[in-house]
Figure 1 (spheres, rainbow, N blue to C red):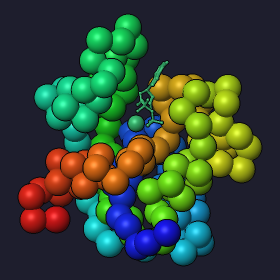
Figure 2: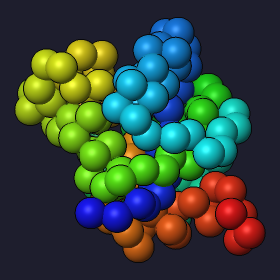
Figure 3: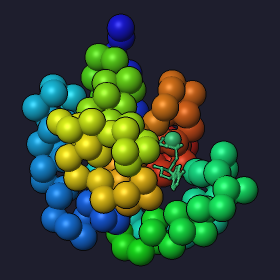
Figure 4: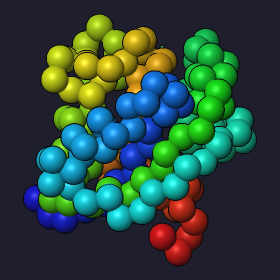
Amino acid sequence: MSTERTYIMLKPDCVRRGLMGEVISRIERKGFQITAAKMMRLDEDILRIHYAHLVDKPFFPELVAYMTSGPVLAMIVEGEGVIDGMRRLMGKTKYEEAQAGTIRGDFATSTTENIIHGSDGPETAEAEIRRFFGPEA
Ligand code: DAT
Ligand code: MG
């Protein structure tokens, strides 16, 4: 394992429900470092790029409505094996599969409203960091 960085985003339900502190605390307690953070509002254009693998899915309009429903907290998180490590802390995508003890298992209310985004591999991590923090990040 090596020191890596990943793109993490606390989604609108996390912000709205006052769960940012809880989730940030789990990231910090695991020993990962938050090296950049900013509140943002997303529009459909950036979501069509960020979720390009999902634009043809029937749930895409619902995903856009949810992700544009309020501000998100965009973060760069660094640490040993942080890409997979954050995916383990987050829990599985599907609501029924996210285990208790994970962020999604403990707080998600549906597969759509699932609190947190984390990059799924090294290439997507770098692309997503540039997408949300700009080419110099
Ligand atoms: P992840 O967020 O775990 O990387 P993903 O990239 O496959 O998962 O999908 C992105 C988001 O799209 C996911 O967090 C929630 C939504 N989504 C995925 N599959 C879905 C489904 N079957 N029904 C509703 N929303 C879904
Ligand atoms: Mg994904």
